[in-house]
Image (tube, rainbow, N blue to C red; front, side, top):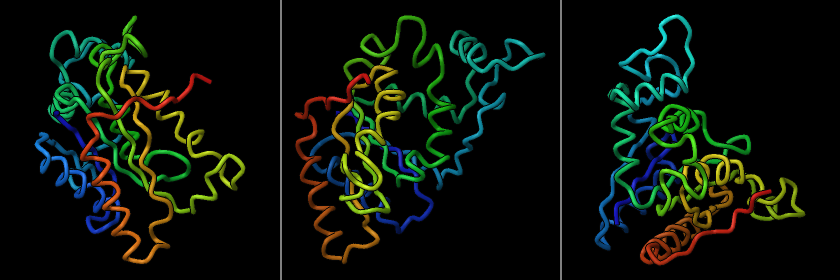
Length: 222
């Protein structure tokens, strides 16, 4: 299986980075091919504008989707975007590893989605949701939170974690055709002793050893 892991955390020694290293090592150790994008280490630019493209459809007025369609037709994506697109198109499974910030993605990862998930190349027309470009492929969110698990229950202080993640699951991943696997959530690792964090890494590794057999997670439409 081809696995593409996108890491979005600025600290190389963070627990998110440890989760990413665990995933990469475990997956390669069980015979899978893994490619990675460590966005902060790459100095990935999250700003979406004309530098997404080497081609130009309308020099007078920037309509990003129009330029994306044109770039798809003429091979006009900038090299950094084309490289990410090729990793995306190569994978059978995509994993996003990130800290949950303000109930959403870190800006660098949201910007990655804004720039890389280009109309024409990754979605458009009838190619969305069940008929999306990435139909038959899977995606998995692995994330950390600042608050404890009790805060992310349906009756918790922050509300159901599945509701928090739904805009990502449904509005991004399923929209372009991915089947979504159940999220891997590490709650408040900063509050955990070292032995508990080690156990979390072991659980993550154990899950990944059988990841090719997992079925899609029910995100729900509403």
